[in-house]
Image (cartoon, rainbow, N blue to C red):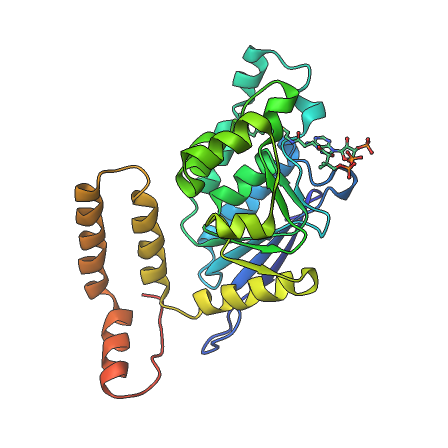
Length: 265
Ligand code: DAK
């Protein structure tokens, strides 16, 4: 597939290998700080659609440049749109597709993650950031509010009061603040951001993939259900794993004091 707004690198897992098994998607509109336009979003979804089907890709890293992960949706593309035009663009279905991607996505954020850029990072499953990263929801300063989940996911991540401050003032927070607030799991020097993301991706890719998928699914369930039905959901996924060869292999390998050999089934 030829893309013009993203760069895709696949580090597939060779048979019997324990390394690799992940892909990197780099947003690539440097002239506009990786602003997310319709074409970029379409390519991103196409790339993910493909990766979902590839068994030897177990995890995806989403990143931008040192200056910007993404400075938001493309303002120039939206500025003159009417409500009807915005509705007809149906941008939500693409954002929803990312949310429903079954494999883990790691956001490796360098520079600005603003507006839709911050929301894109929030749609991912783990966020790591470089020391110069800045997160913010500045939509209020251009007359709107977050439109891709910012008021919901950010609020769940950092709580009502911090989300209110960010959304109503448009103030940016640093990577370190984002870490203190629980948005970011790790802050690293710029030069090693991708290396750190790769290490994380390799670790996830080296785990039994069905368990990884069901673990992600169960955690996401926590955001849209009660504790009771969430626990029920978790339990069913837990039981389901006893029908995988990897569960048998994992537990036998533990008992036999050897390394497990995963089959991904
Ligand atoms: N859109 C378009 N162009 C952008 C852009 C953006 N979001 N951000 C930056 N650029 C462009 C600038 O216009 C400039 O282009 P030229 O003037 O050179 O042609 C170039 O990138 C470099 O930017 P600056 O010259 O401004 O660079 P600085 O270092 O001075 O400042 C900055 C960097 C990131 C602080 C600044 O560019 C900035 O404030 N950018 C805008 C940030 C922002 O307001 N973001 C929120 C946008 S609204 C939805 C899904 C998503 C959304 C809505 C709905 N649905 C599913 C329905 C999301 C909405 C948004 O994100």
